[in-house]
Structures are given as structure tokens and as C-alpha cells.
Length: 419
Image 1 (cartoon, rainbow, N blue to C red):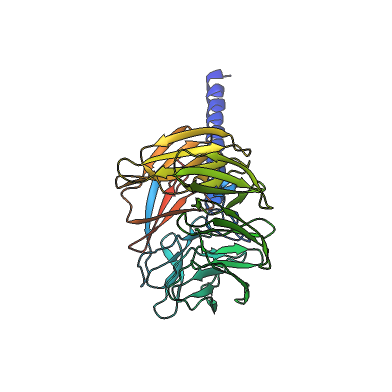
Image 2 (spheres, rainbow, N blue to C red; image 1 turned 135 degrees about the vertical axis):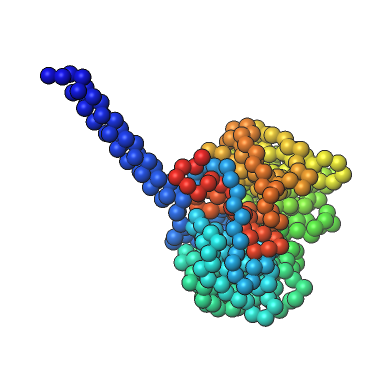
């Protein structure tokens, strides 16, 4: 018997088996990544800043993997830019509101539906979506518009006839929508368009309202100077004032961020002393700690750690500080940048993404969860962007074009593997 031929046949068979297994592995990996890339938020409410607590936590989406940016043009009659952040309803489905009064939903660059608002109205604050992915948008005519997930108008409800007032980003709860107006009117709307209640304050809300998982609502209110006491108030799900606390000679600069059984605020006391405050759900101060710069954004990890983004603006070089505090308020680490950080920390499972601007260059900074800088990815070649990012379920970071109908998607290449 010719042992050489037998060996050759066995070797050839082994090679064929290895090739087969390799191909099978590639197909399986491709399937896994395809599933990952096609994630949806089916059955979930969609709010800006991560969730109704506004924690900016995206741990369930995994780590941020960034090696490319793609500019997707909206091919529609109204392809004007946007003044509000988009909504990511799935990995590649995005809702975009134009300054000429159209709301589009598109998948990559393919428009799935378009809905026009009345007359000259246009969306002026961040949108949200309920569990069925009906879209809610507040417009310049003082009305809330709701568009179904198929692009059909569901209702239009008048919230305010005060043409001098503006609105803050909407908040979707399990039992309705919260609308905050700059002149202190806070409203709750049912998913069918009925105003359930309204609460009036003499102060202006700071940024957006947030809520805990029992649907209690938290709103920061400010005088915009040190002449009076800025306040934090808690409203029940029925609009009753649960409690309110005032802060002497203090300006509240951030939304209340709700997570890990407490509320976190960024403030500046008189004589420009920046602080982070932790308050419990009964309105009691738990702890405070001094910050290294003026607070601009706050995030809370799934484990309860707090990550602050701070920077001092003015004459000279901008300096930003990213700092992590333990749930008890101890500083764990901090890192400084000679650029202006313009977004709260976006928290992934293994890393942190932050948007920064240095001169006119825009980029995404990736940090390890221990505060070590990992990567900087420049997106300066993108069209003019609204620097208010949202995160899609596959971990892509998405920006709306501010002057033209584009979105810029920052993440991994669309392909077999994230390389």
C-alpha cells in the first residue's frame, strides 16, 4: 500500500474540513453581527439621554466601536436641516425633524415616511416615542403633534398659546408625555392627546425633565442669576407637588439625572464654586462634592457611579474635565482635555464616549471605564452638525445635520466584521 497517497488523501480531507469549518464560523459570526447590527427597540419607549432618568447609560448596547463615519443624505422634497436631535428607533431607522416642518423616518438614506406639520410650524425641542413607537413632537405653534409608526398623524393638541415661550425636550413615561415650557408650565399629555394636568411655576425649567421608575417627575428650575433661590421639584404622576427644595445663592446648570435611587445635580454657587449634589427621593441632600470646572453634563452608570463633564469657557484655551464619582460621592478619577466637551458622557458596557470640539475640529473621544483615554476619532469632514448626539441600539452615535438634511453615523463599518 502506498502510504504517501493515503497521507495525501487524509491531508486533503483535513484541509477540506478546516475550510468548511472556517466558512461555517464566518457565516455564524456574520449572523451574529447581522443580528447585532439590526437591533430594534421594539416595545420600548424612546427618550433622549438614554432613558426616562436621563442617565446616558447604554450598557445594554455593548461597547462603543468606532472606525468610520457615514454621512447619509435624506432624499426627500424637504431636505432642510434640523434644530433638534434625531430619534434612533432601531439600528438604522432614524426619525429626523426638519426646520421647514417635516418629520421623516428613514432607514439609512431611504425615506420610509414623511409627515408635514401645519402651516409654518416646525419641531423646536427633542422628540420622544411611546412603546408602539408613535412619535411625539412639540412645535413652534405651541402644539404637540403625534405621528404613528407608519407616518400617519394621530392628533394635534394645543399646549400653550403664548408665542413668546419655548419648550424643552419631551419625556415619555409609561402613562403619558411630559412637556416643559420655558415659562414654567409643565404639562402631562395622554397617549391619545388629552391634557391630563398642568403645573405652573414662576421659574424656568433647566434643560429637560426626568423621572424615576414610579413615574415621579423631577424638574430643575432657575432664576438664571443669583438673585433668588433655584429649586428642584418633584411632581407625582398625577401632577401633585410631592416636594420642592431651594438652593441659596446657587444656580442649577443641569437637568436632574435620576439613577441608583438618587437625583444628581450640577450647580454653581456664588463666587463660581462648582458642585455636584446628590439628593434622595424625599428631597434630602445626601452629599456634595466640589468639581474642577463648571458642570455641563452628568451621567450615571448602571452600577451607580456618576460621571461629570465640566469645562470653563471664556478667554483663552478651553479646558474640560471628565470626572467619576462613586455612588457615595468619592472622586475615583479625573482626566483633563484642552478642548470643549459638548455632550454628557455616553456610557457603554466597557467604555465611555464624549463629543469634543477643539478649534473647529469635532471628534469622538473614547475612554476606558477607568478613565484612561483610548481613542480619538475625528468627524471634522462631516456636514455642519447639531452637536447633540443620540445612540442607536447597535452602538452607533448619530448626529443630525443642522443646515442640510443629513445624519452623520459614527461607528463600525457596515460589513462582515467590525474592522
